[in-house]
Length: 71
Length: 187
Image (cartoon, rainbow over all chains, first blue to last red; front, side, top):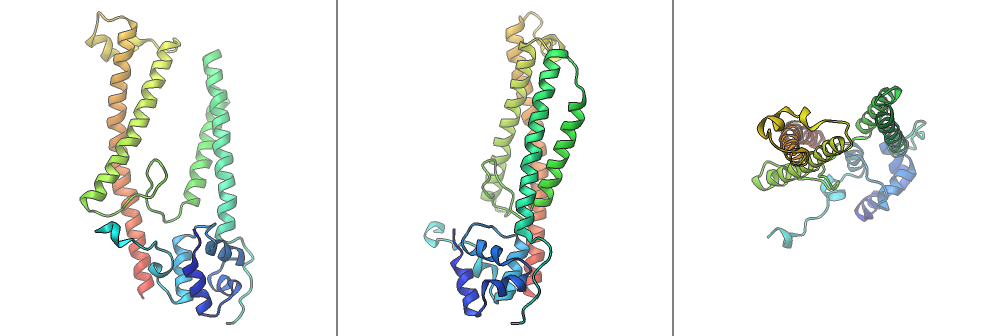
């Protein structure tokens, strides 16, 4: 599943994929793979990306819970 | 933003790709060696170099699994993440998975014993418990009873091990790591 929230957060900070990749210590291809949903990052990388984009894990990575299902 | 130098070592995705290749190669090797081992045992009754090779391949597989392992929630037998909370409902889901995996293990153990007895590699009277409890029984009923007892014992042992390892190691470790990372994030 594509991670559109990550892409939006990256763009909000005016970061290219390469900028974000350099900030968190991975390759540009890895950031691209995360955004298009073909790679599932480790928790440590998730946290590093959150720090670089100023967001939280809930904002970028955890799936949104359908509240209708929980009631 | 200041451009940082590109990483000169493989990043985690590249390491994972290579690690997975090693992972599956060692699994395939282990299967081939196991097949050769079974063939030798059936035809000559002896095991040779295959035993060491099998142990080595399994060790490589285990090490690769550990290296590849990320902080992921424990998974059920289908590979789906399991809940890691302490609510009764979440514990019940995990216990059900432990029982399911134990049933698979117990069934495999019972089937293996039946095959060994059927192909004459093991004498059903070697199982003292069934031979003692049912002295007048012929081979077939004894074999069935042996399979049932092996299934029950294997299930109990497997469930005990799965429960202890799952609850006291995997779930506990995962929850501790997530709590530590979240605390670090808040700082």
